[in-house]
Image (cartoon, rainbow, N blue to C red):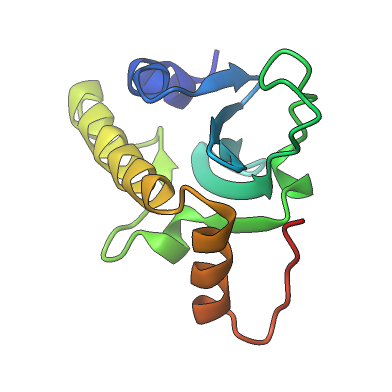
Length: 141
């Protein structure tokens, strides 16, 4: 069982996400969003990855949607790129009680969700990406 996934399950469901494996998917307007939890192979650290892909009107999300892995999304970020002033690695080696760790993880997820909510259309996603990475061209059509 993935402890980070279990910790964030209620808030993700409340925000319209659907879980497949270690990723949470949501369709908002004309984009599909993903929040992926990636465990380090070398330690008990977990990384939060966020991605955006265009929503193709030919599929019926989530029924006919294939739920691609995070690395196939056209625009992707690590949480540390978008959440300022936070150490965004979730560690299960903390010497803190579980409740303190869960509060930290939930605060991090709330910040990620706020970021994702602000990029609710292809136009907003592309505009943000272009400002952040002006030399990288991405097509969302």
